[in-house]
Image (cartoon, rainbow, N blue to C red):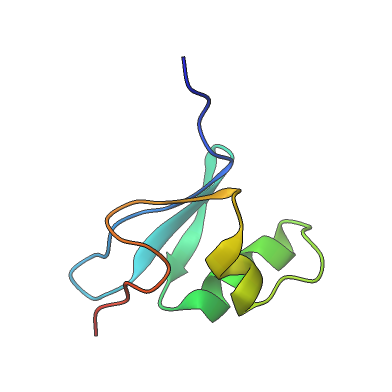
Length: 71
């Protein structure tokens, strides 16, 4: 049985935002990598930036990767 990723970014919604879940809590809607990085900083992960968000193995991207942000 596979373990769930601690951070999940869900597929884009109609407005282009993507829900973000950390552990078992939804923390908000992200509209870009900066938003995801801010959610991670608020969760206590230090030194997070856009590059970290793009490359971290802790994040499971659903419905497209870190480069999928419809406008």
